[in-house]
Image (cartoon, rainbow, N blue to C red; front, side):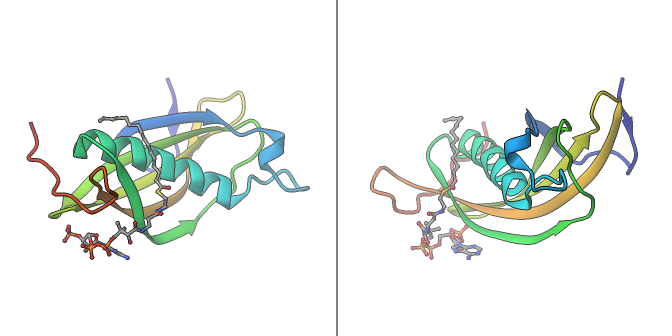
Length: 131
Ligand SMILES: CCCCCCCCCCCCCCCC(=O)SCCNC(=O)CCNC(=O)[C@H](O)C(C)(C)COP(=O)(O)OP(=O)(O)OC[C@H]1O[C@@H](n2cnc3c(N)ncnc32)[C@H](O)[C@@H]1OP(=O)(O)O
């Protein structure tokens, strides 16, 4: 049973992974770019499921790093499809750290991602109705 320090996560748990020494600077802080890459992967998974096919990241908005992620923390990424347009969708993404060997979960980062569905030629394609 985990304990959430900053309210409850919004969205569905889409990805979990462990922050390793190779992902950190000399002070043990995990690089923001690594966290962002994991958020991109989570959005790719969630958006591909919704679009039922290939997607790309068109834009990343409102990203802010509220707390540091440390070596040994488990990164938990939650995604929520906030808006579905014609070929694009906007996802709200939250990154939480389950602190090393503890049940404490803290929100470290959040952002908005715009993902676009593509056809096999790499052109934007309409997102199908939800089934
Ligand atoms: C089947 C189940 C599988 C499940 C399991 C799958 C697992 C498998 C997971 C793989 C996960 C990989 C996830 C990697 C994700 C990357 O890392 S992809 C690499 C990085 N991204 C790129 O390289 C994208 C490069 N850019 C492009 O290709 C083009 O600019 C784009 C994004 C396709 C847009 O093309 P365009 O010709 O400008 O298209 P346009 O018609 O003007 O706009 C299309 C839509 O995008 C919107 N848009 C375009 N630019 C922007 C912007 N800057 N801001 C906001 N909206 C924008 C438009 O408003 C429009 O929206 P709608 O009104 O149609 O809803």
